Image (cartoon, rainbow, N blue to C red; front, top):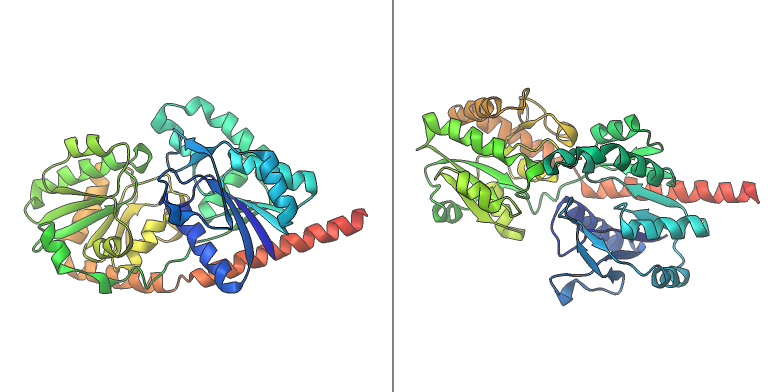
Amino acid sequence: MKVAIFTDTFFPQINGVTKTLGKLKEHFDQKGIDYLIFAPDDYKKNNESFEDNIQRMVSFRFFLYPECRLSVPNYFRIKNILNEYKPDLIHIVTPFNLGLCGLKYATSYNIPLVSSYHTNFTHYLDYYNLKLLEKPIWSFFKWFHDHCEMNFCPSQATLEELRKNGIKDLAIWDRGIDTSLYSPDYRDESLRKSYGLEDKITLLYVGRLAPEKNLGLLIKSMKLINRKYKDKVNLLITGDGPLSAELKADSPENVIFTGYMKGKELSQAYASADIFAFPSITETYGNVILEAMASGLPVVSFLEGGVRENLLDNYNGLACEEISPENFAVKLERLIINKELRAELANNAHKYALSKSWYNVFERLVSNYQEVIDYKSREAFISA
């Protein structure tokens, strides 16, 4: 099997999409599956990220989706590369400039085509005062996905939203977790000491510092928590983004900003905290939820979007019914004051994460690839 992948977000960018693609790439390497990735150029000019099977295209940052870079691809170059490569299937990860090139080639040469939906773009519009674009964007998405034999969604909630907006041929491509990278074993007392957390209950947020992550609500909740527990609780915010300066200016002194972390340092940050506080309501899946659970943290979040896929109320975390700082603070307080409940949910969260295997996730995906290839082959035979 030879697979060509088109994506407008890839390493060295770090986000849920690139992490998933990185794991998929590893799986392909292990299984001997031939692949070619078309991705934006490496704007950090890190030569180590250039590989023979990754074709880089000139790109610039996309204001609405900062984790994505809009490429300026040369279709004729792409066509020549694919004519030589002869893919069995094309997988489009993002429906932007690179994705449109993949779509054009697949439809022109009758190549089996699948796509995946990773980001709730329309949910971001409110945060950028662009709500008027919602209907045109859904119309574009419907047109785009109608060309694909199969459209993958990371969660049932996302699948239902796409179906509601007229998109068909939907399938679940869920997510796994690397429990060797995220584990309670990475708890590090020296890290806790370096941030002054030794005798504190530590709340943790990991992710982009951006409007769509609902971090203003988290800061308001922390201010409510501080009315009773200021000397007992700290909040560690790990990540970077456009709201960084604004959040720092508005945060009480027991909110600590670590900046961007990755690798072992991030694993230690997860495992060295006590509660994962995740206020986002725009997730298609929420990879960080699983990372936190694998690290032995109970999760407090809203049952919105893809978070519903993994957050089981009163089992591996606490779900907030109402989207408000007060409700979020009440759930956090329940875990802050109840050590036994915190330990029980943390243990359940770790067990839950252990059941999520990347290997099984990708084997199902490859099986879906083969199903589409076989279907397209039968269709071509019948039409002949």
